[in-house]
Length: 201
Image 1 (cartoon, rainbow, N blue to C red):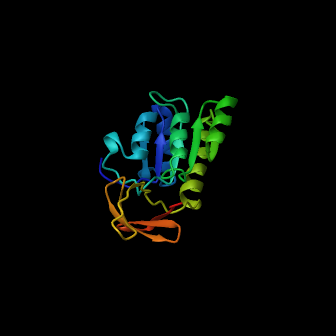
Image 2 (cartoon, rainbow, N blue to C red; image 1 turned 30 degrees about the vertical axis):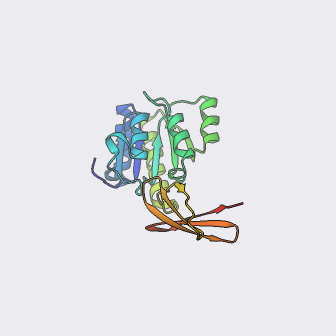
Image 3 (cartoon, rainbow, N blue to C red; image 1 turned 60 degrees about the horizontal axis):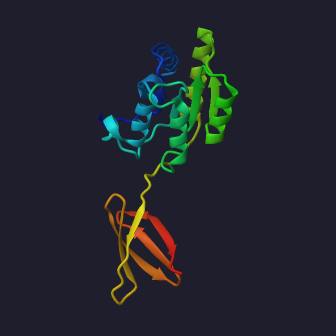
């Protein structure tokens, strides 16, 4: 899929509920910035740029994830767990919108870090109003941190007389390092803000 920027990711397996959600957001000119996925596995592919979304840039995350709980293949709880466990996606606001009013789902969602848990209203107009308020607040009003893709460091240390080290990141980018007192300061090439101080003791 082309690297198109979307403000909202909607993970919903019920086509009727998805259509009502998009209708509510359309009233507030937000629907053109929404991407709909139909199960949890597709949601994870989108968020982590894998599978059909391997060409999508991880540096452009959605501003909001609207997440159903009861979905095929991978349920919403597992999507939430994966999203909040990864530093690269942890800051993305997640609003659970589900028909499940089970206390265990509510408790587990908040334990994992959900930003809001909403039981879908049964009445059509109430549903539209609720979705519109969610979209306007989380996409227009709320401010989220700037997202920077994270890199892991794989040290390959070789000392040849001088305290000079070479390493590469998990994406293959080279880097250099220097020793300052008892710590190793490593900087990644092309990413000055990416540095780590590693104890040499």
